[in-house]
Image (tube, rainbow, N blue to C red; front, side, top):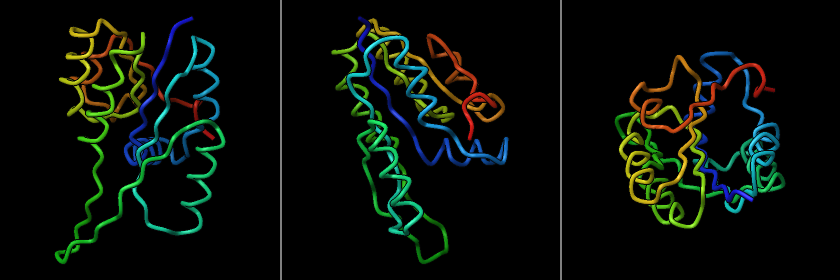
Length: 157
């Protein structure tokens, strides 16, 4: 059975599905779809911790589905901007995990991950699948993936 590792850039998926569809992503449907293709041996959701009740419920729901939730604190800068980026953490985890699985599934539209996917495909000979909102996913990320899955009505609440 194919071994699959899943990595979710939660902020990216939240904002892109909201912008494109005005709806939320359905992580349970995603899990079912991916699990139909093999064994999910690792699933991590990377999120920002603000500590509000709605967010805590969401994080607990992810855990109940089967995700490990990694949190970074939300940082509000003095100039009004905010920081809460998981790109490096996701990249490290993908690089460490890719050698032990057949497929890496990344949920993000962020083009910064294109080199990461090329690297794991070439070095570890894994299939690199991306789930993203088509109009808000970097072309370079789509092109670097073995397979691109459109996030559309079928994966929304």
